[in-house]
Length: 295
Image (tube, rainbow, N blue to C red; front, side, top):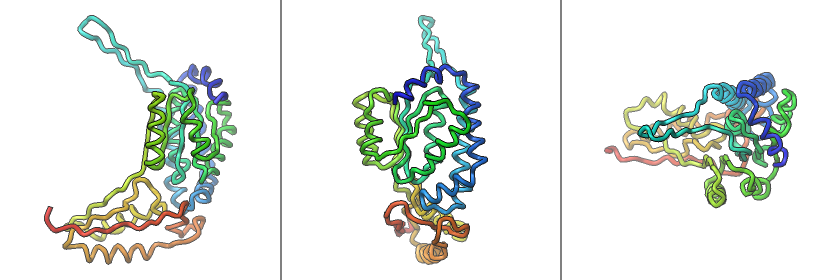
């Protein structure tokens, strides 16, 4: 925290074009080292390396590039009020941002938090999940490689109840971004509210796919399987429930079960693997429910 606060003065007054260039350098370095990061994510999370290579790491690179260029086009606003006053809205950095990211997308979601915070002139104390620490460690290495200013991005490894709680409760962290479970998010939000902090919460979901009787099963069944079992089903937006219209329910269920049985389960580092290892021992069993024929 001392490091982040010390760096805030210079970083917040650094021209947006310079901050943009540093983030673009970081994005370029990540892209150049894509294979190493894909392997790290596969080792960290158990996801198939093909998924890390084609989705997770490229999206993290895109996050840095998007916010690096978006900051060049922000603007303040002025609103005249009945010719009596002029209300001005200024967009300014707040200080040290606390960014707590989950284990299922350890670089993609970490970058989704820290990139906009850094681009807008804040410094960051980021805490990756203690379950998947390796990818964030490599990000720190790349930051040093591209000579990111010291103290601007601080990556702290530690457990939620200790390092995470200390970050949330710290009086000099005016903004918190958290992605994780709903129970933890509720406790975090309550604690931050008592201190009037700005809070962004992205929590768990229970998402249904609704399958009507007039669908093309050749197209829908593979998509339903992909929605349920990509990343071992360990997505907050995973299709963990299926609501199927009654008249196609038997055929859909038969096709769905057969498609799941064909998924190749194996070593996450094997290029042919479609379903790797679970990060946590969570049951991945989508519920398939029968819907009546009328709506």
